[in-house]
Image 1 (tube, rainbow, N blue to C red):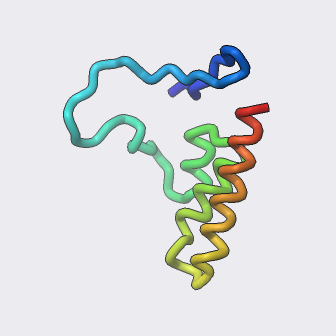
Image 2 (image 1 turned 120 degrees about the horizontal axis):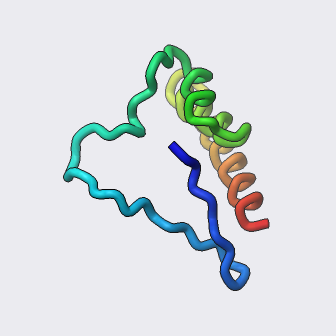
Length: 88
């Protein structure tokens, strides 16, 4: 699956949505992770950036390690980092 890249028009990023026909519900290919047994495998399979991987890890441990607020703050920090990069 190819990563969506923004087109910059007039100083603003414009994203083109996938226009392929879709069924109304059910499982889709982007929920399938062949041979992935750990979070790090999914991160590699989806070719995530460092920031995206940090977001994924924080989401995976959100309710598990007793640091709910800290994990939410990490998600926000790394999401903002990705937005800053996209807007640069």
